Amino acid sequence: MRGMNSDSVDLIYLDPPFNSKANYAAPIGSEAAGAEFKDTWTLQDVDISWLDLIEAKHPRLNKVIHAAMSKSDKSYLIYLAVRLLEMHRLFKPTLSIYLHCDPTMSQYLKLLLDAIFGRKNFRNEIVWCFSRPSAPNQRHLSRVHDIILSSISSTWTFNANSIRQECASSSKSREGYSGNASKIVDGTVQLDKGGKFSESGTYIRVHKGNSKKATTPLRNLSHCCVVKATFNEEDVVFDPFCGCATTLVAADRLQRKWTEIDVSNVAVSLVEDRITANQGLFQEIQSRTDVPQRTDVGVLLMYNSPNNTRA
Image (cartoon, rainbow, N blue to C red; front, side):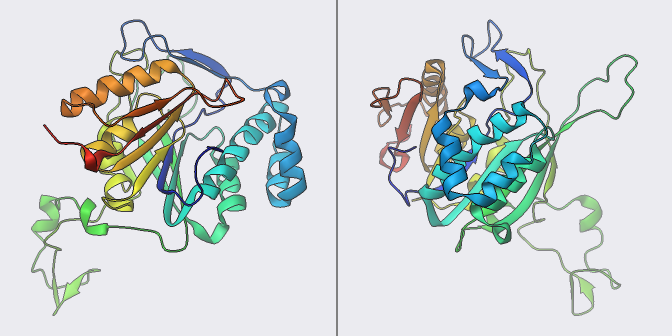
């Protein structure tokens, strides 16, 4: 990210590690087989220059990090804080950022966003619900949701009509009803012809973690207030934790420009495979693995979709 131009990104969607205190490897036979990442954190994982930067120049951010309950949590927050600072530098005035996490650290990550992007710019907490079988002798309610935290810049883009959904039959049956309702025109209920406005809670079916199809559903990105709603055709979407390429495939299907980063070379192959399968062509992608002075920063992927001829 430090090699990217300032004011160059219109939408950021990131799905970073969750501080789950476990390490992961994609199952053999899955699309991402061979990919792995570590989600355990110690102070030895932290570059001391990161902490020096935060302590010297970002006192509010420093307070959030030092409020962490353990050294592991503190290390994780330092790791994400320096990256969120770089994302803030990339902001255009029209930018929105969506940070995908789970309840493990969501409260701390909300504070990081407030400290970096401004509390007044926090817009939403989208709840992505799913289902899974309960465990034998379970003694708590099932943990079946992730969180997507959203902040914006000064003149953010939001195309509300692009994400309207068809109204339920029960709502349609109320149209023309004369009574107390939130949307009444001339004394009767009137439904928007474009459909119902999307909500901040949504249910999406997911596959089991050991499934060969264990990737984030595309409609989570293309329909849930992200790709369609928050940037226009000439804008650029950026995902600094590319993973299985879900963000960029959703962006590419909508003919948006995208830039992605991932630490794993397996992700590069997966990007190529998924984009090729999506559109049948793969002409404009550029990959960089020659980032100077650092060998652990991963691969920068860039793609300009409007210049590509669609199949």
